Length: 111
Length: 168
Image (cartoon, rainbow over all chains, first blue to last red; front, side):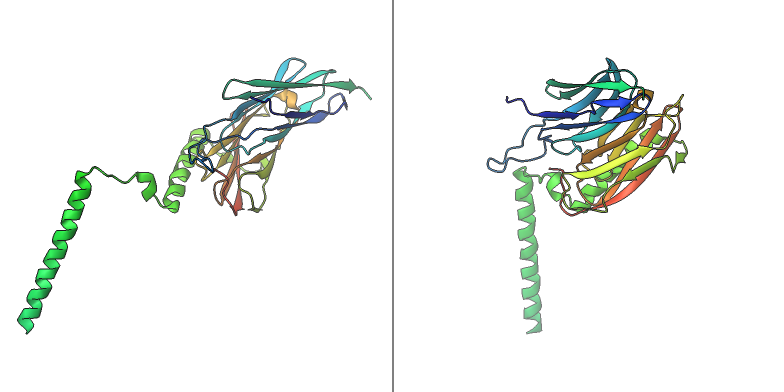
């Protein structure tokens, strides 16, 4: 199976105490298990990203559970409070158990 | 004359009954039962989905009073593509102590699986603001429910008209 694309945008720097925006996008069909194949008419099996986790400096700061109502190629942005410089790590977990991870480093400034 | 016509009508009516009777019997004997889903009209299906969604809402909220101005939610009035409806929400809270949302639920009131997503926040988020895209089966309310860490609950609904359903 070809590894589908995962995109992650985190600002390169942020001021301590402020919240910065994390933007995520995964290329994924998010099959609900209800769609029929256009040619064979067979049901396309369920295939979802079930969970997205965000770790900042190793701590789980935000996570999200997704069901069949999330759109294909799921896009999600949320905020994280700037504390210390370090990695922002996003993990997408599929119902097949496949985990994909992207990491970006952020520098925290005091001024 | 009159007698004849009446006899004719009675006899034809009786044979008609007999025919339909045998047809029904034949269908019963062959064991062909129509699948219940095929008999369900669209409005009945939506009503069934809505009942599930009402149950989920009741489970989350329970008997607690609903805080009305806790959530600022945006959703389009009209969604042309039900498979990708842009939505965002922001929770009006300080994110200090227990004044932060532990979980925010998004529920599509007539979706086959009404629960769309859950978002779990911590104080480290600094702000509970999320932008996402969801699927919607048909025109209905999109309900946002915020379960706060202090035990209170907030909810708000946004009605979205969906031109083409996206839950396939």
